[in-house]
Image (cartoon, rainbow over all chains, first blue to last red; front, side, top):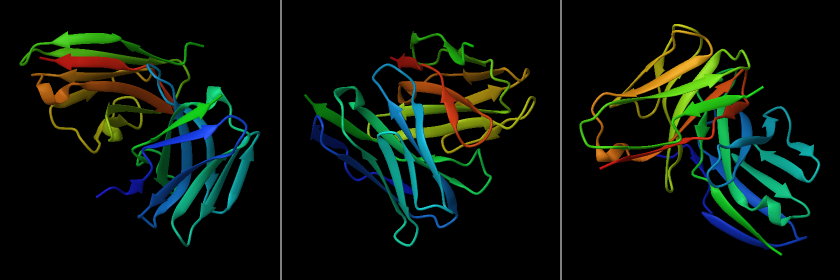
Amino acid sequence: DQQVKQNSPSLSVQEGRISILNCDYTNSMFDYFLWYKKYPAEGPTFLISISSIKDKNEDGRFTVFLNKSAKHLSLHIVPSQPGDSAVYFCAANPKTSYDKVIFGPGTSLSVIP
Amino acid sequence: NAGVTQTPKFRVLKTGQSMTLLCAQDMNHEYMYWYRQDPGMGLRLIHYSVGEGTTAKGEVPDGYNVSRLKKQNFLLGLESAAPSQTSVYFCASSLRYEQYFGPGTRLTVT
């Protein structure tokens, strides 16, 4: 049973519009959430994170929203750029358990010029 | 800083052969991890280490062994490769939550 779910395997968005990537989790012990971005033939790179004490974290064009009651988080990219085309992984950790991370299956984002 | 490096980048093995994948990091991180990535499955943790001389099993440890004799290196071994181990393998290291990944090793077992 997947503890971290990304129910959209792929997403296409026009350049300049908003991209919204969703992630759901089942384990209420998860306390810290991260998004990673992966280009083909490269390793994932850290993008943005959020702690459960917050409901929003922003970094430039990227904003992550956390709804603890719904066990749902989302990544918003505004405006979307062709260089944002990649696979995005959601990941979740229990509190201070750096080694207990669980990754979602990923969503492939295509930003169309 | 090189960050996290992995060798080799590609490898083809026959069933039953053995090999070792090497991961090195120059960030003085305590935590190191080995993952495999398969289509539609995301990243699954094979083994991890919380410090020099320690190792622990992750989600999918069967068929793999690891060693961490030096803080900067984390080795992943396949003693008798099977076609089910065809995958892309990623090594990562971390100080806390954020992990830094290597470029990956694409392994094919025929």
